[in-house]
Image 1: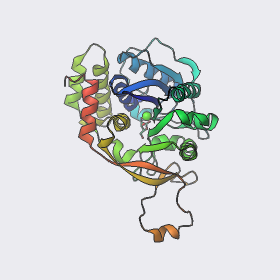
Image 2: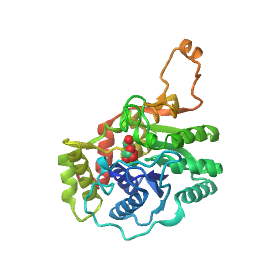
Image 3: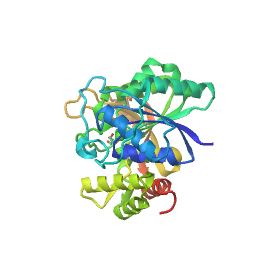
Image 4: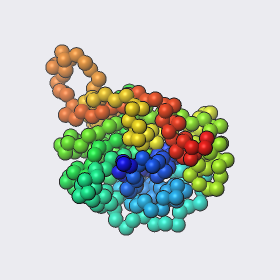
Length: 324
Ligand code: RIB
Ligand code: CA
């Protein structure tokens, strides 16, 4: 049985890599894609998402526009990473389609209510700032009945990227991340964090990217190769990470990551640490019993290691049609 999934994206070069995998792999039933401002303004995210789904031959998938800005922070973007249009400035033909008229939160609500009614719980895969998800869980908590789990790309146990201390998706909207962790604990929703500790590992080389581009025909393979080449060149590297696509791999092939159940909280007040996911890896009860902060109330599965080649091959075989 294909796994019912919904992606929440800020497309984004690596979100596009994740969308291609989710749209094409037979083991997934992509029910909808919701968009949020992040890597680029939300309208660019919507346009990029529609374009990627067209390239994958999946114009049937519902796409909805969501939050334009974080709950409290001013919106920033990551166009220094993803290009001016948010998706590599590839001059790729834009989709002529429009998003669903419902707000992303309403599409999420409707899809999850349907999933609960048919007893086909959905795996929700947020790959962006968690603003839509926070709004959803606080407005319609009953949708938890239609959720199998949340597997989100965000945070980190060790490193940062947006700042020395924080990962971009959580840094962009720290309040939303804190609300989502709190709501999932309240509602009994299982959470897996696919953070920076594993995010950068699955890589595609330029030779593989060029083989994808050579497939041509303005299809998924060519787009996938162009995305990888753009990202490698942006970083002056000989390869590029599949980024967000790794979180989709973790749903398709959970044995490819090593997870640990750990307490996690989001720093909201720190001057230099705001947006950090504080992953508590202490193992001596003495420290814990004398900690004035106490244990974080939320314990989730944190991905600490990944079989990078296994996930890179999974992505390449899927977007390349198994021909590379
Ligand atoms: O920190 C990496 C995350 O931020 C990825 O989801 C990337 O697409 C950006 O949204
Ligand atoms: Ca993203």
